[in-house]
Amino acid sequence: MARNAVILAGGQSKWGVREAHIVDLFQEAAKACLDDVPNLKPKDIDGLIVATSYAGRCSFQVNTAPVIAERCGLKPTSICTRCDTLCAGGSTAIILAKGLVESGCADIVMAAGGEKLYTPQKWEVFYSELASVDHDWDGVHGMGLPPPFFALTAQEHMMHYGTKKEDLAAVSVANYNYGATNPVAQMQKALTLEEAMGAPVVVPPLTLYDCCPITDGAAACIITTEEIARKFTDRPLVYIRGTAQVCLNSVSANFPGAHLADWKHTRIAAEKAYARAKISASDVKVAQTHDCFSISEVIEVEELGFCKKGEGGEFCRSKQIEIGGKVAVNTDGGLLSVGHPFGATGIRQGTEIMRQLQGRARHQVKDADIGLTHNLSGANAEHTILVYGREPVK
View 1 (cartoon, helix red, strand yellow):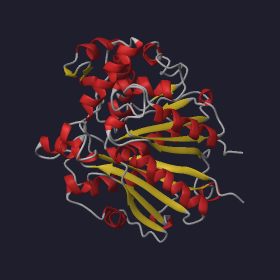
View 2: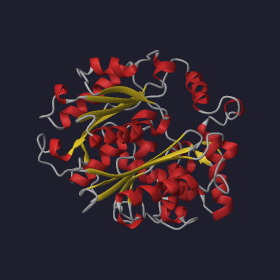
View 3: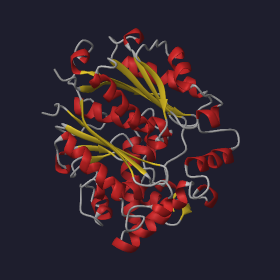
View 4: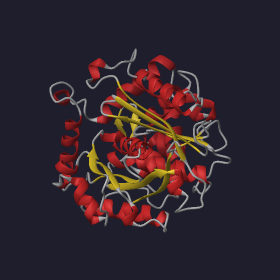
């Protein structure tokens, strides 16, 4: 009998500027995750996969998985390890956990991700970000700093497709307004279009609210099989139907698209994930996209197949990304509002989709039965997609 992976529980620490060590943040997230399904105890968990990229640089903590396991009261007997794919780390951890439980190599795996990025000297954070790209190429030219890179991307999209600043602002407004009621979000603030348009410019055309904040935080979820999950909960099960992770380049000079706003790797990842999940883009009711910048969401709704190429700006401005539109996007606030502690984001996204498909989300999408998460990573080099559903693949 096939072992179908499900996401059983999820939770996160408070995200923002935290005076806490990274291990403390993981401990908060693990507790929130276990509180989500009270019948599940630490002794039941036989695997831990930790996603973090900057624990060593910003927190002076390496060998993170064993340290976090002990702090959280876990004694893994099947797997205890760390993965590092920067912004896609959380989604990578879920994919690895899925493979472990479906293969029978583990039964109940906690996937946990997090970062402690704020340091006493803020320049350290930006300097450390240069370590995320090829040192000899993008690193020495500053392309490891996200705002300039995504500002260039926005300029390309405007040049090729006529996208306007109002289109970018519409994304920020929608996501901030979702996040305003999220108790663990970093930016708990409602936003008007006028505020978004009038905010200080970071790198033209991106303003303050077009950019996700730097964030301390962690998230955790439980991946297991449907048979085991039914022992712990009577909620509807949420299956991981299909996944894909595509990396076509690392150095920005080798970007695979026709231009910076042509995200070929997203299209390939979407095609593979949809095929494995046996769905099409039109089946997706709710999506968590990687809105590290507002322009990212504009392009992602195109490349994920929710609208035609070049029409992402109008799609967002006409509220098709909001509940009641074609597909509800980033219903918990996304990266722009909730924040982005790299390794935690994919897990936070997966937890929101789980809640949507179980009918218990804060901003609930009616009749949500198929959901999607998407991460990009590095200098827009790697794209990771997971498709979740109320039913397994048949």
